[in-house]
Length: 193
Image (tube, rainbow, N blue to C red; front, side, top):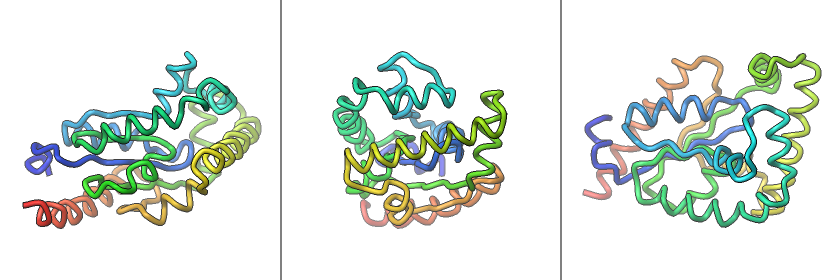
């Protein structure tokens, strides 16, 4: 896989619901391939100068400033991704790269209870409070991407992903992704060489 990645003529898009692990997995894969990791969420948070907690995620989703700029940012970043050598992480990264044949698309999922547990621990918040806030984040995300792109972003991306994984065990998830990626890259390289 490292040998093939030296060509850097392909990229990876990774997506999933909040706290499914797309950033963690994406950063790990980027380090294996020696690719640049880009997080759309991080770009949006920097635009409105906020952090990563659940409250700050709500702040981003309610920010009129960032919502006005999202499509512009999304288009610019998806075009950069199409050039290769990128691992793009974001709620709509698979949708944004849907027409690019040189992008391997990964959708991660994880059940709601597990994601609440992860987030509650990360933010040091009671489970019940975190659960309420996560439901609100998911409601706002669904509404936002339906308005911006006219899609149910989770269902659509899950259907078109090259690799769909349930992320409960990091090592198993990485193994499953690399297995599917090795098949994809073999087919992809046969088409371009």
